[in-house]
Amino acid sequence: MSFTTTILEWFKENGRALPWRETRDPYAIWLSEIILQQTRIEQGRPYWERFMKRWPTVEALAHATEDEVLREWQGLGYYSRARNLHTAAQQIVERGGFPTTLEGIKALKGVGDYTAAAIGSIAFNLPAAVVDGNVYRVLARHYDIETPINTTEGKKEFTQLAQSLLPPQEASAFNQAMMDFGATQCTPSSPNCPSCPLAESCVALREGRIDILPVKQKTLKVKERQLTYIYIRCNGYTAIHRRPAGDIWQGLYEPWLTDQVPQGAVLQRQRVKHVLTHRILYADFWLWEVEERPQLPDDYFWIKEEEVGNYGVPRLIEILLETLNT
Image (spheres, rainbow, N blue to C red):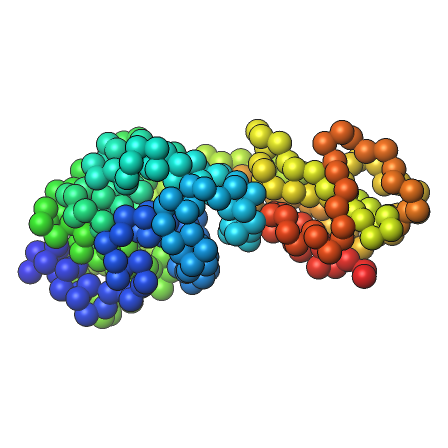
């Protein structure tokens, strides 16, 4: 059997049962793709279910506030996805419905080539191949391709290969099959080669190169950053502010961020290490109990302590708040 036929046959027997695969509703499919862009299925699935329950249509999501969307997204990270999701929902409503072409889907905020191909093929069976980490891995190993996947040349080469293997009438099944095959069979480490239906034709397996493919150029330099947070407790109130544009966690809330620890503050937790894609954060967390509200920068405001949970905060702040002495 050909590569394509083998993958499709494997998918019939081994494809994952996922709720967004039980519908052709482009909204539900788009929502799942945005959530899963940087998130494992087991973590993202409950978020998808909550979003679908709270905002079952794109119109409902479009009419939500950004704060509501960010609060529901809390814990997933990469919060620009949530802001883009909200903006794109408004775009869809303004145009009168979900776009049905690749160009129209790619015009939505936060949607790139991969996401557009996934949505277009699954919702509308458009003949566009998806190329994600799973697809890169399967193709690189099977065809023994050393071109780095994070280069322009690599992206072009793998996209053309995936497109050449795509059966136009079965785009939805093939793309989902490739995702599942890479996620459950041809895994990053310890792939299940002995039971792989492509074992006989896999060049990397034959030549003992499974562990070195796919190739990725090292280009990122991880930066470190120190943060000091002061949780102010004043007669049942505390102060927070909303993080501005142009930095991490845009639009989310946090306690007082400062370089100076005020006299009388008590250390709650020191040197929490929080790893992001491009940086490592180290945070200290202090509790400062006062009788009068101190002077703070203009963008801070006071809320009742029991209302802190109503505001979307980064995962790091969640971790710090959990250590707070009540």
